[in-house]
Image (cartoon, rainbow, N blue to C red; front, side, top):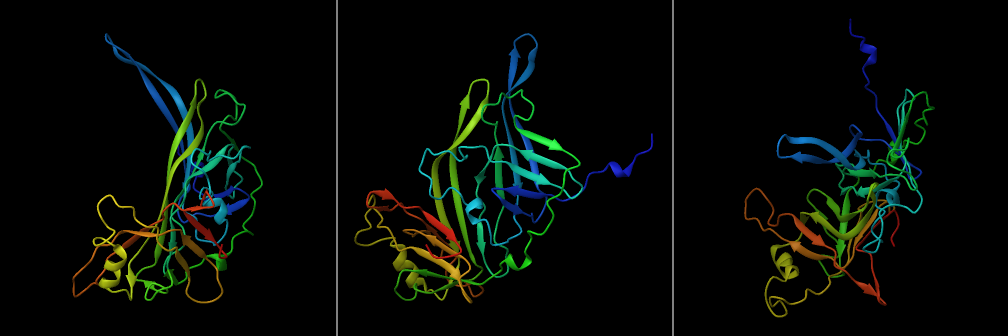
Length: 315
């Protein structure tokens, strides 16, 4: 039988999640993940394996439109132990121009993208959206996790905005004292938010929820116009008050904004402390390497303050 080339499937997708539309820099990948447990026997070895858990993982890199920040970074204000999922199922939908549609019925962002702030880069790294079993569904029910359909109406591309793809220069402020009150970077600033999570399992249903157990927020950059002495002073590696075991006093907030024009992006790392400061002695490189600032936990009238803020206006 001759091969029919029209049976090849090769077309882009449009992701809709949280009332936001996302185009991807590269492919949108969807993984139907199953965890299996073997059935062993001494006489015959592994007799079989049984599925004990399921989830769906959607991964893509947004093209960099400055939008939907609350959708991409939803977990900054959550308390530890809180669910990453909404109380009502939130669908993640992938549409293709030819009318194919994959709907993942109960989804949440489980890996927030890195935020990349530089004039030669687009804004976002890869995001992961995870789908779990729907509320009040059994795993063997039709559409318990997803629905796939053809002949659907494509939403259209009116939501794309090339002008919203921001590739700007950025500056930073870390306190009010020179030179840290305004400084720049060699290659931009990168915000990383690392989530630690724990799956909630129910017998016969597998993972029904994912909860936040820890959050670490940091910003990395190679600062320019900052001397080695300035770095060492802020690093507080030795000297009075820096005994081993001593508490590191919470630092000033590290604030990143675009260099020119009206404010378009505001990023704030609360109580920022230098975590790493490699120094370089070279005739080809500036004296300090990549500095990593990490947010420290602060409290306001007994209430924990979020570790970071990402928005289009100052908080």
